[in-house]
Image (cartoon, rainbow over all chains, first blue to last red; front, side, top):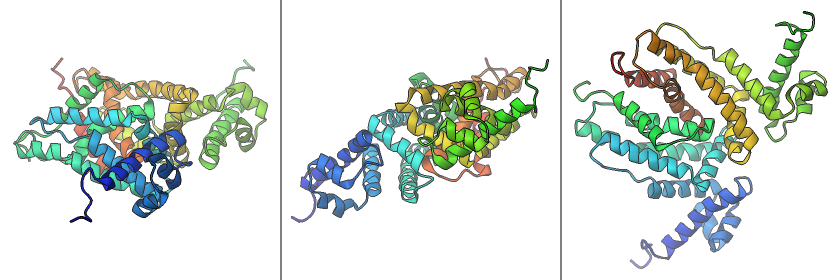
Length: 195
Length: 195
């Protein structure tokens, strides 16, 4: 018993400190200057702790962004697909707009084509995350609110346009815009009777 | 008469050579190493020609990407919104996936938050381009195929999900995916009677 990490125990605190330090260090120093040594220093932990647990900065950043998304972008369950998608996209875009996540996503966009380790970490994150997000669509199908549809592609239809604005066109993402995006997507989904 | 530039004349040829060289140089050397001198050398024109005409690399790249989009992503007019949007998104994604445009867009994503000149060039490009693309939606409204809707936001709904895949998640963009994206967007548009 005594060897198992307790939630809120020393191990959890070290992990939280290192993951937070990784995102902060990325936002400050940039991806190229990012090192496990620098992250350990910022977190106030010994660097062997960081090397032993994560091994590479990509593995550490993947863990950091997963934890961050879990905390800041919870999966809603309002009993309404429209309300769930709106909560989800609002939280996802607020998270994307923080300096840490913004820096991470933009660095990944620039590096992924030239760096297979980055591309793999990005794919691992999104494969997991879109599956988790898709639960709001699966529940809407299960309760007969909409007909069968691909849950991931519904999430992509909702996240795609605001991500396009934030990252590509730079146009403002207002809450009214997010509501129109969600309305447009929900209006295009199959009705419950239709298979 | 003799002073006016003719299409296909020397001036047009110089322009085409410089714009092509700018995108090729960006793909090879990267944004940070990009210089008007290097572009002029690659295009085989005198550097004062390039400095006089464009002044900055951002102005030159903006011109290059505009010309490239005009050439490679023509505005279709099939008499069907579904067919037009599909042609448009296929061409836009094929263009995004070329090494030159991919390098330019990814560099802009990484740099825009820290570089107002880049952010302004990006905004200028997309403000123009989404307006031009929106013509396919305006025509569909005019011929009574759909009800009134925001043309730019329809284009963003179509471009957003595949851009999200290419730049962010790295997931494959198949032609079947593009067809589902277009179908989902068109299915969500207001019917012609509805105002």
